[in-house]
Image 1: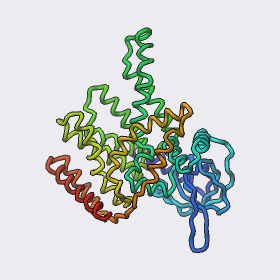
Image 2 (image 1 turned 120 degrees about the vertical axis):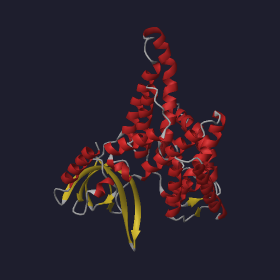
Image 3 (image 1 turned 90 degrees about the vertical axis):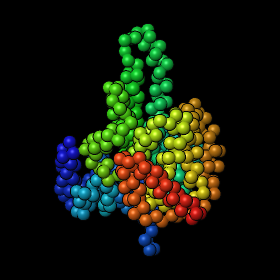
Image 4 (image 1 turned 60 degrees about the vertical axis):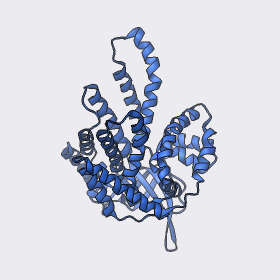
Length: 396
């Protein structure tokens, strides 16, 4: 399957680079101003209709086109086959800016009107339509240890799937008792959940972390329905192999691998500490995941603050905030939680940059794989990561 997927991607690459320039249609994901010496210009981050993503530059006078579809003529001479799996830069000339308003733009415009505070509007747009946050908010959330909460991922998909299941559970049971008692309600409701979530996935243009989570959700239910063990490293490995086989570009996605890492440590905890009571699993697992992911966060992002370790608390509170915010927006009370968000983003985070060498992450990954074979390596891994947390805390 991987060979076939690569063959398709190569054919798309040949079609794109057949001539020195190519006409492409792409949606603008992000737009920001950059300077080089005395010259200022705008940088656009785009995703094409053909699936590849790229950067280009535009004049400073270009209006805000985030979320709009552009028709561009791009220079293809320097584009390599390897580059189309990642973001690449291409010189371009904008031929047309579509005036058609997409559903995503309508939702973002509505959120902009509801929330007068620009930062709050940006947060809800990121939560509901996967609109990228600006650099200041990204830096703030990274220092607070909550970047994963404001970038749609498997965590959000899990909350949404649970909400949809609960919403359909009672009305379906009423219909089932009267009209089709022979049906398996769990399977039928899950099909409804899967279809709705797939529609949402398409609406968001299939972010890598969300794609991984959706596939694991469907794959996991199939295994569960057949009585096969769900929480296992084999399940995770097969899921990753299948996803990368169908979507080779995921191999180069940082968000995808961070998402996989999070699931890996959740599974490692559930497998190795399965004798714990449900209460202790609920209490300890968020703390465990935070400690395990900390080296990844520090090596990749580097932001740390006194509030960073409290991300465990923020995550638990977010489990209530996220579904509640959706409900309040649906009934016209979307601003009710704005005050709490304003206070949250106003925290004096005193950001400190922790420049952790990549070798520390390699050691963490190595110990993580050893922990699959020998239980005492789990404790070595835990103490190693606690040492990194202590080092970061001392640096404050």
